[in-house]
Length: 301
Image (cartoon, rainbow, N blue to C red; front, side, top):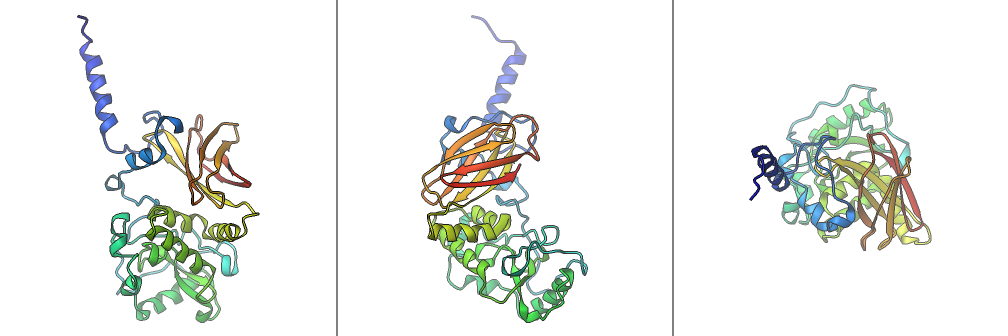
């Protein structure tokens, strides 16, 4: 019988251990990813996530320990600039990128956000937020009446947003209720009914909640195709998760980059898809386009 050299046995054992281990650190030289067809969609998504091994949430946001009973310092006056204007404006990501409540995870939603009245129990008192709101308005250069703004949780409390972290609060133009409130309520319902994950709902808000509002409008008017797309690199599989959300359920989704490479998957009954995109070479910064049914949307890797 032929025997393998010790170095080959050691290498084989190392590969076997690596294949059974937790999610590796993100690095472009990690193990090559299988294709969409090689692994069942749901199995792969569940297998490769390890929340205990990452300092941030699955939505890519930091968890916060800021106290709800203490006035929190805000960015310096004039240093923040909203994206857009009016009721559909969004916060400056360098000031308000979002932060999460560590008490709210996918495993605890039935004891937290899906319980009626829970958000009111964790909401900071006005004696704290009124001071913060004034400083936050100054940071964003808003000189109007405080009544014309809502001190908004960017990731809402009902989706596990941090209760009193300056990274998750900003002066949203307009009084409540507003268009963003309807999006938040819809996403919370989808999470609590098990139609989407908590992380996906948080990502929808942070990526661009206004696109989600337009998607909801398109869903009510199905003659118009709408979609949103975001992407994140997965080091273990050496590919990109391209998240597509549309009003085109049960349709093929094709993601293509500027070099002509493409990968295809399909949306589920709610219009969601996670396409495993194998971009060639150093793809960071490359534009990709997702096409699903009559909808087309783009983002940058």
